Image (tube, rainbow, N blue to C red; front, top):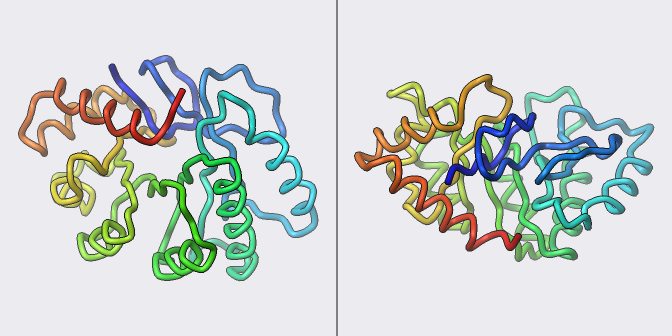
Length: 213
């Protein structure tokens, strides 16, 4: 059983694909997440977008809130990003669904937002490709990690981090890469020195622990 924890298109390459869906479109996806990405926040439409988000996240096939988060390389005002991310935290805790996080150069601020708003839901850092020191801080907080195409680089931060985060803390994804999730699983298995079937079983166990279908 393959699970693609975060993707931008449903390609039926895995039994479960959590597709990052638009709040402004009617979708026929099997499973998906909703969130306001920090790259695309618009102050002019923010109230409408947040109200739409709050209305749609209760859908049964919506398994998580996100992707959402903080990005210091985004052109969007960082204070606005923080404001919107806090709304996601509150919403996720209200409906008890995990947060799928996009975070770039903002991990201290991310943890502060989660702590100051008494976050109690699982937090998954998607597309993780940062160093092991940051990974340790996130592990201490209780975060999970979703690894994608960065695993294909043997010397990447992701390839090193997946060995240290612990078997109960990771998921695998394709994000927006045009690559089979099965290839990502194969690379993860190679890096961990186990059979692909073991990685499949572990990701399924981790998924079941976080999300009830």
